[in-house]
Amino acid sequence: METIPYLTKEDVAHLDTLLQDYLQKSEGSLVIVIDKGGTVIAQQGETGIIDITIVAALAAGSFAATKELARRIGEKEFSALYHQGKAQHMYMCSLDEYTVMITIFGERTTVGLVRFYAVNVTNPLAALLKTLRQRDSSSTRLLPAESVPGDKIFV
Amino acid sequence: MSIINYANKEIQFKIVYYGPAVCGKTTNLAYIHSQVGPDNKGDLVSLATAADRTLFFDFLPLNAIAVKGFKTKFQLYTVPGQVIYDTTRQLVLRSVDGIVFVADSQWEKMEENLESFKNLEDNLGKQNLNMESLPYILQYNKRDMPNIAPITYLEYVLNNRKVRVQSFEAVASTGQNVFATLNAISRLLLYKFTRESDLASKRSKTSVLMSTVK
Image 1 (tube, helix red, strand yellow):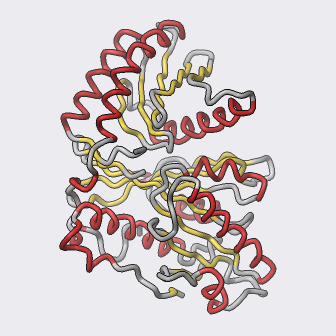
Image 2 (cartoon, chains in turn purple, orange; image 1 turned 60 degrees about the vertical axis):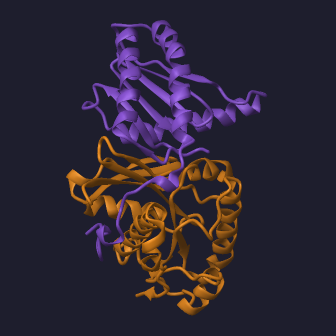
């Protein structure tokens, strides 16, 4: 099952705890967990500085494109990608078959440190995400039909 | 795929504009971007060639009015229409919630429309999705061109499945029915959510409209 149907407050708190700990240890500035379709699942850190949604869409695209590159040389996928800038850098790693973790970090840390702690947090995150995906989506309760807007959602 | 976040009170949907090359998918997104207020949109990101042809995808994040206390985020994508970029189209379709199929109304584009629609069905099949279960809308674009096929013909070739879907005559370059199309697919997604989340009692309210809007 690829989809996480919903996240409760407790799920988000659990994810946030793992990500805060990771961010503190690795000294990264921002971490985003996305599914490989580009949807944001969780985020922690300096979230006000960039458009998270766009970063998620582009990162998912980048990860997908490099997966095809990997296949051309006989690999299933590249499990991690590193983009080096002058002051800001990005490290992306696969948490499981469906999810990617993106870390943005500056000069107060190194890619080695980020990578080390990313590997450490991968297993607990993957285990939690697996539990969330296995939920019965039919138990979701959300929109009563009358709450859906009538004619115009966008004007 | 859509995800409900009860902590942030947020729902996310992914809509993909699909269709043959140069049918107006990017033009749809560009028009939407030009009309939506800055508080409800992000940047329009285009991964295009130097000649402005979509290479990977275009992406436009939109926020809509809250539904029962939830902020609703729609992520609009286009695929590259050119035949050679099939792998890229498969990647963009990953986790899709709804489709807008943009057809080029010109007679000489009919074969490309059909090929693209078949390609969409094939690519959805690779993700264990199908047109029967996935909400989609048809948009017959370029209705301002001189050599266009009549709507009845377009309906016959593209909207001839067991359940006919809502379709729109559009001129994306001027904005005609661009928002009508977007509103229709957005509403279908919200209704689908209603249906999936509140199965028993609300089913009767979710029927798909079957009219062509001029």
